[in-house]
Image (tube, rainbow, N blue to C red):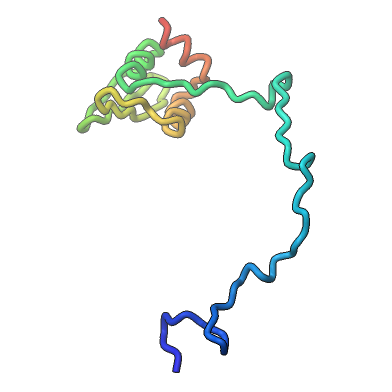
Length: 121
């Protein structure tokens, strides 16, 4: 009698192997597995990740006209006179992740180039 969790076995006591049903063959050709890199195409080149800390981002957004309206813990809530608002976390010396940084840029209606200019200035 089989019990829950027991391994199904054949009559001779060996386990059934699922990989036996996979098609056999030579596999993909060597030519098909090559990676082609085209650096001359601007659409294929990834831009380097912008690394910015919360404190630096606060000062850059301040230069863009944003003001800190309130702070709750390490989260600074900023608002621009035109109504744009966002929240910037300032956790010690931690770098803001790429997803959160893109969300902040979307909220503030700033481009990556605008932010780089503000960070330099």
